[in-house]
Length: 265
Image (tube, rainbow, N blue to C red; front, side, top):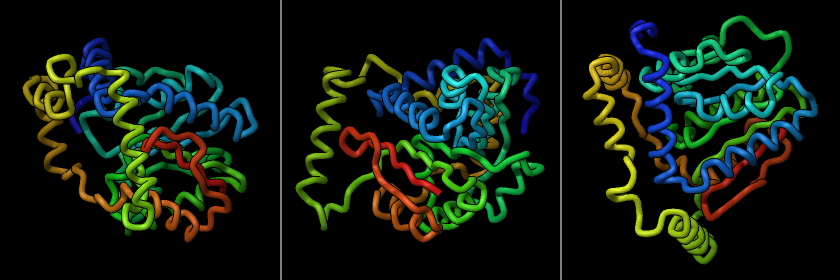
């Protein structure tokens, strides 16, 4: 990975602010879902200093919000994307309680990349809008590993667009879509065109920035791309969590297909 000192912290924070805005193009109630997830960590771990693993952390958007609310927490934030990981490190590298690690969740034995075992098992594992990038087989292995990293009673919390099976639940699946579309329409009337940078435009701008171009090229070399469309299905996640030995699994916050899926170790 390119030297992190090449990225100015102020410039990194500007890029992350743009990242957050373009994410809201696709998730108008993103901050509400962040808040619900952090509520669950706060209430569900039962301690003021939870040890949290953030999967697919991107530039640290969830991690810094969690530490803002629970300052005594420790967050281990992992990602395989050299662009967003480098931005997060440059912007928040000196944040107490936050550690960024370059870890590819698709790789067998990825948990070794977490380094020496922590003093205690993780109290919570969290993720937002990331795990649908994995294939169903990769998800099954991921959840098996997570079961070994979490303490008994620990929480897994995944905020993402996880959809119902349209063959088995056609009416409810349609209602999920309608509710989601109407929520977005209320928050961004007329759509984002001409008003907000989208995913593709953000990445085009990153590639054009001399300070980030090498990292963008490294991202392409690593193949950090979406390749698991079946993992947008709610049933795929629920089945894999049960197979991994999680005791309770269910949606604890939802707007359409945008949901917070929780599981108890």
